Amino acid sequence: MTTSPVLEMRVALTVADYERLVDLYCRGLGLEPAALWTDNDGRAMLLEMGRATLEIFDEKHAANVDEIEAGERLSGQIRFAFQVPDVDAAVERLVEHGASLIRGPLVTPWGDRNARLQAPDGMQITLFQAPDSQS
Image (tube, rainbow, N blue to C red):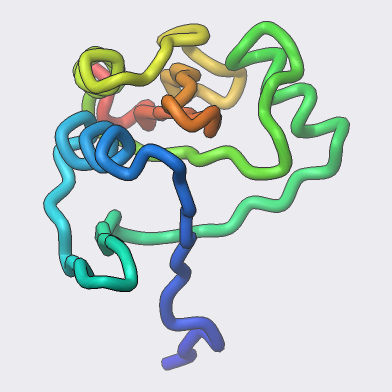
């Protein structure tokens, strides 16, 4: 059995409005904190989100994906993409908790149902539902 040379990927996101982003990711996506660190040195939270992958795009491919999902080139160097079981419900929850809907949901050329949102801190978020989980 082969093991990956990387056992876990973590993205450390530093935000100006901690409470607002905690609300978005915990209540909006329905995640429970796996760990909390609160002391005189500040606050932090660990959210486990299942399997992690790293996508690396060149500028042309990123522009193409942005055009499909958002109608124009919007995302910066980093964009989050979360696979969800029900993209419509996830969009509704995230918008209720502070995200702005940019576009979607729509069926992409690769068959997923995608929606593009923007978090209160400006992070671009793609929500996607795989074809096998669409009704």
